Length: 320
Image (spheres, helix red, strand yellow):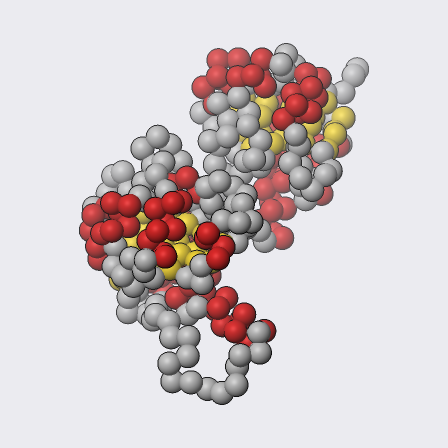
């Protein structure tokens, strides 16, 4: 009996690949750069399973060229790169990797908060440039984290994990979500707030929301103008949640104090972007889940989704 074929659009950690190779014929796109669209479209015709990345657009055009495709396993928690409704219409199962990267991503978000508040990247460059000649009472002054107010927008797993870190540093935590979460409020000593209250009262704002029509460009000029001049904005969600040009203006004119970004719009960020020239903005290359343990577990979860679908079973991590 001929083996099912599975295509993986980037080289993921070996555990996931090895699981799939035990049962299927597996092909991996091994280049460092994402697979070009035209090549993916030509290849997908022959595969029953697809493990894809957030950078891969899995839309109607692609699925219409994939008559054998039974499952799309996204190597990510988010799935805004996939037309899930059309996949369902075609009878193609869709899976993701929820939960596993919660704490790892929250670690990165709080790292960005700390680095931006205490101007760590500026300080490192200051030393490397040979400018450190003596201690100075006004040298690279930053902002305290303890005793400040953290506003968390989006209060799912990662948002709540971020809140726990803030509470551990003695911060007051406000949160906003589509619906209040009284159980979390009682368990964690956090307060529900409107977006306007988050903007106006927070010293730090951390974004943890999905990208959709209502959240796209949520942080725009109007929102930024409501923020404190000492506010630092953190984004580990999706780049398009922030209007990039409005953020640049707010940082250039000191309407807010700084930003720490793991995601950008566009992504990857162009090397000539003004954001990269601003001392009060830290940009890292979408590494929220980039720990050895988390990325390895994600590869296993993606493989398990493929195996379940190709075996006619329910996906353990299905997107519906």
